[in-house]
Image (tube, rainbow, N blue to C red; front, side, top):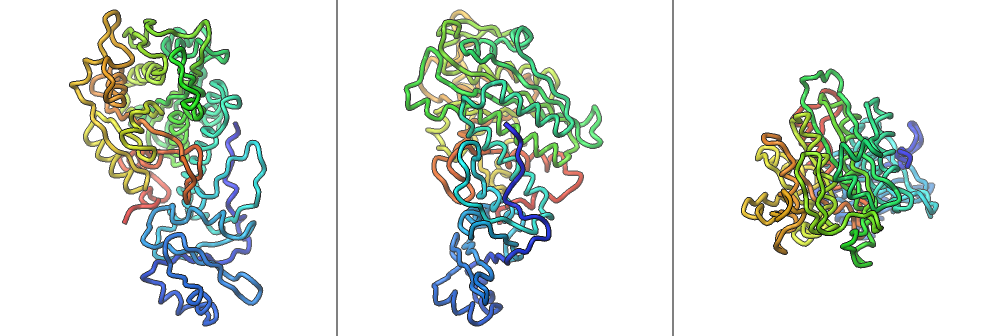
Length: 474
């Protein structure tokens, strides 16, 4: 799948109408600044500047301007419906006001997203002009579009090799070193991933990317990312019911999210070393698929009894985490659409965070709040670790009890993280179940902005607008 550019931006210098964004407290002053006839039009139309309240302002030749009410919403999503609600193919420039301009640009672009692969757009969206000074917001929006495109792609159009190809294309675009591991080399280096993909006619592979920011030498901090890229999950022999498969094209949402994060890190030029590993695989049923109670070897040397073939995502991640730890990262992050238990616990909008480092946990939670990209921390509860015991292997991939499924998955992964390695595991949904301003139904880049914000602050952005400009709370 091609990496596409934002198509919701007007060319530089194109004529654009003013787009005002107003809060209730400043409505009186705003009306005073308008021509009397325009002010009366808004007053008589009952405009109150409530959140998402949009009015077109007439002029001598038709529509002269527009105003969007913000209410008390300071998130990017306050601007998230504009591309669809403003007149088709019209160009607009945001007028400065009591809002973060980067949040306005980001929200507009997030709301302008449409999945383009199979049907043409029903209307040309409105476009935003004058956003050149918001490079970081545009970078984040572009990465979010890429993540959404990857997750929304049907599994017959995005198999393991296609997902790996997206990682390789991203590496080429940013001058990163990259390699594709498949075949016999995959069997040797990533045996658990090979076992997960053994049942599919589309063989598994792993894409590995390495990049260094400007001035980042061998002693620069290493950020290591590991993404679950299950392009379709049937459940294997422990097959899912049909309803459980309906969204399983999104089971590579963790990998897509970390591809988006890697893109932002590289485009921002963070002074870090970056490693990205994407385990690309399909979990299918066939005569060559792994079976319940099979015992697998892993890269770390631990053996795993397969208590359930539908708990395959942790088998994909365990090999990636083990290899990542060989490089001694300063922060190791994995993202995965891993457990239904996390969704039962915190719902679709809150990715579950597990972290073995208190400082990083606090930073990720705080930046999730600041960027309106929230996380919710769940515990690595030691008392449940023994539930993973196996009578014939080092560990089972599921628990002996039916409780705390998300915690159990995190505890399983922790066994493959080297002692002393700061590690964050994010169990996310990667999907919007219904359309809301700035969040159209379909794939979503959850936790991406929170991760970037935390990393950028910890390892300081050397150039460009501050990450704090992007939709901060308060």
